Structures are given as structure tokens and as C-alpha cells.
Length: 68
Image 1 (cartoon, rainbow, N blue to C red):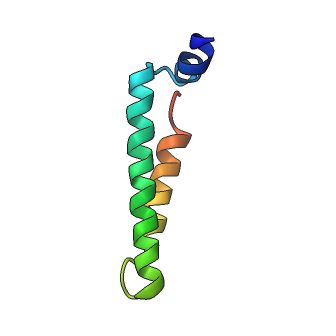
Image 2 (image 1 turned 120 degrees about the vertical axis):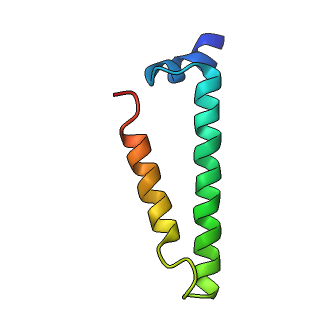
């Protein structure tokens, strides 16, 4: 049960539990940054015009190319 819950998925991308946790935490922080930029942009359109989309594109590229 422990193996399935904590170790099986990280192993599919050739990571340890802690490597996977660090990757996921950094990913979450980037998503929060993108959300913050989009929120500010919603109220002041001239600010952060491309920031959120640039962060999302970078995250997609990073996620799409992992474990290969």
C-alpha cells in the first residue's frame, strides 16, 4: 500500500518521492504566480499582458518533456 501511494507514480518519471515532491511544489508555485499575474491583469490590463501565458507555456514544455 505504501509503495502504491507514495512511490509508484514518482517512479514512472524516474524520480524519488522527494524529487517528485520538489518538482510538484515548484510547479504549484509557478501556477500561483501565473494566477496572480492573471488576476492583476484582469483589473489593470496593461500589466502582465503575457506573463501568465508565458508561465503556462513554460510549464507545459517542462511537463511534456519529463521522463524522456
